[in-house]
Length: 199
Image (cartoon, rainbow, N blue to C red; front, top):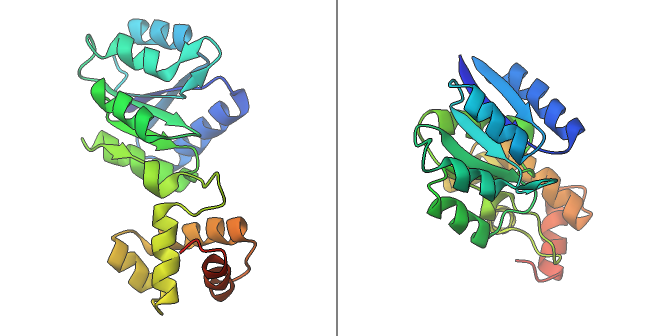
């Protein structure tokens, strides 16, 4: 049994994610904590925690402080951040502390489960470009790539092959693109993105 500690001070998200990952990720026990102090106490009390994902902003501190505290003495534990606002600066701080992940809450549960499997397999996952929501009306770089390829006549299957991502991930991006642009289909999304100067 693999064990992950998830630290988040929003109980609905925390418990909902725990239940969802239990269904999606084989052989995974998810332990939860509501803040930095509870998280550190759990780590001290348990020797079976393999991976820790903490929200960046917590009621009694932040996820970086958890990583900073644990990194020197828990080199066998994967340490990472799971938050709503992944930035280049945050990724750099996580990497500097030896962290293995900086994941966006913009991932759906299936995408998050996939990232967690990658981390347990010894990989690293940093999300800034692909899963960061646009804050200024622009599309993320990955979504720009998808719309540009669609404008060039590529089908979702061909887009997935060119970008080395799954076809289901492409479809998931389209749903976000449609919502962002107020479009109902690919053609309309390409038209609006072009008109707005987003591609």
